[in-house]
Image 1 (cartoon, each protein chain N blue to C red):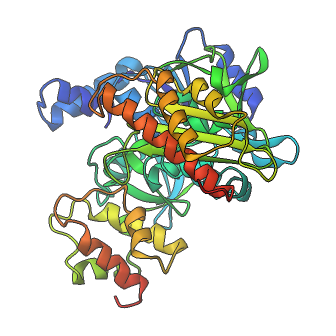
Image 2 (cartoon, chains in turn orange, cyan; image 1 turned 135 degrees about the vertical axis):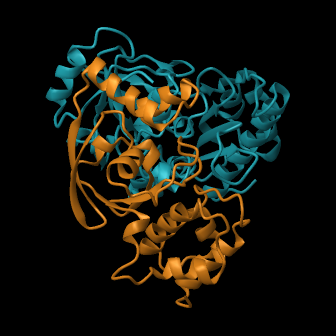
Amino acid sequence: MSLAKERGQENGRKGFFINLLINRAIELEEKVPKIAVSFTINGEPKEILVQPWQTLLDAMRDELLLTGTKEGCGNGNCGACTVILNGRAINSCCMLAVEAEGQKIITVEGLATNGKLDPLQQAFISHGALQCGFCTPGFLMSARAFLNVNPHPSEHEIRLAIAGNLCRCTGYDKIVRAIQAVAQGEA
Amino acid sequence: MKPFSYVAPKSLQEAFQVLAKASGAGQVRALVGGTDLIDQVRQNRRTPSVVMDVKRIPEMMRLDWIPGEGLHIGAAVPCTDTAAFPTVTELYPSIQESCGLVGSTQIQNRASIGGNVCNSAPSADTVPPLISYSARAVIIGPRGRREVPLETFFTGPGQNVLAPDEILLETIVPPPPPNSSGHYLRFIPRNEMDIAVVGIASMIVLAPRSSQCTQARIVLASVAPTPVRARAAEAVLEGKTITAALIQQAGEAAVEAAKPITDVRGTIEYRKELVKVLTRRTLGLCMDSLGRKV
């Protein structure tokens, strides 16, 4: 969460525009220089300006408008913010945007290729592996990173791989079935 | 949250320049995985002025085994890499086990043993196995380099011996003694993703071709302000032939070192009972690994 958002909440959630004003005021007041950071996201090179404390999650959502990645707990417990960093699943809420310099990131927006869904996305649909859908991008990214290194896992391995993702709707079974289907080439 | 500035030195010399300007405790905070630090900063539990990302310093990423000297684990090496390192899987099973217990896959991909050590939580999973193998912490700063036994690194919850201008460079784990085995178990009320109610690392050395214990290390987590050795339990085992009855006795003795508190994760009584059970189980696993099931 950005400093402005946090202060905005402390001020009783007076609204988006007040947050923007607070944000601007803080920047002027504290003269915090923004830092330029460049990285590759979903195959595209990007350069953005970020505050030192801005998380990768906030930078992706607020600066790049890639809002597929969600913030759940904001402290590394729920996995809703999972993205793939240099081939590995990580929580983007626990990483500063400035740390992404020179790194390769894939978000849920980067899973489909040429308008064709990733087999995992298709399997989640055909197995009904989601209800509200808020946790789904995180599950997809954890599962994708996992299957890339372990294409034929056991059910136990799948459950371990998604242990860092919480879902309050499905009871997990359908998510596990969807991932199994992809691993078995049935999707 | 207090605003901070970010630096990512590419060498130890650059890092020393940043540290030399640190005038107070906690002003400069090293960043590796961020899985503790970023949340703590956002919750105002730590308020550094400078966050120093140490992942671009090559020495911090060192992971290497030198026969006769031991295993060097750079402070910024992710748990995932440490757990997969062939020497770790062959020689230090309890280190591998503990790295696989730190949070989720996402956390293990970013968090390091060095970060777990410097965060200095009494519940840190990677610490008891390291202490059981007599690991040393290598501390550096502009004033020089020093080594301390990891056992003496911790001074309280979230606190350690690092001066404001010092950082952890690496932990060095001596080669495990011949005919030894170590295992780590922790108890949590679910299967994954929780903080240890109690964690126990045991390491035993047996005399050649016998069940006689020549050295024992039992280290407890989450039952005192810092990780602690259960010296009374070690004394029960050392010099004796390990039997089921002796393991039972060691479990009882381990409770002496436990000074737990009652909190959301468990009561004092519950934690003391867990110390007995996990001490017995880890010792049993060590004997199994040595081919001397009891």
